[in-house]
Image (cartoon, rainbow, N blue to C red):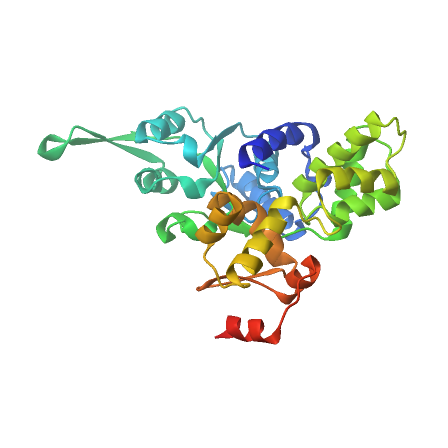
Length: 336
């Protein structure tokens, strides 16, 4: 499954199923409580909230939180991404069009280049934009005053942000994987919005293979719904769900074909690891970033993959799941 296909499908899913109010947003309770205090305090001071950084694996609700922040503050939300801001002029065009109290959401903020980051520093701290005209000794700097605004940034790889950039955010929150019960509630809410009848066992089955991620749960629910409609089933049952998952090549714990390829590449081609991410990507014909963002977090969460400075290693649990013998000698080699 390519990252482009996933992103296009995710966009359609988000438009239909994204929570529009705090009480519709299931999970991430600590973050919601902290954000409510941040927003309520800013309202009492009659000023925009501080800049917010949201980080964590893909599909956990960072974009949804950005939308809710804008809605709760009564602000207009402008959306962009790190790769879309290629030049200083792109950033200048965005910032000079901001109004008082607006929220600028920057997705994939770790992909901003350093030159753009440095222009953002004074914009975030002092609400000014420094523009340099010309080059060399004749270059001149002009300073434009900007309205007070809030940046909400999202990233799956907070470690790639520079320390000076991270320090400009007044509030930083890490989104965690969801509990199984929370995923079940999300599936039931989504099924209701999609006008789909689903029984309790099927709900639990989809939740089990959802990788503890709402986006994945919603994607699987829609594919199972498609299967049920094509086969004229009035209700999604455990049997219907099982057949749909088999067609989608999703196993009983949510592993997809790409996950299996990654584990097999580590075990069969590199004796279980440690092995570098680039070597894994080459063996699986996947992009390094796709593995890091989409597959590795879940494999680590379920204990199938471990990571160290020397590379990635498949664990005993991964061997057992694939039906491959795991020897004590292999385990000892990983510890050396």
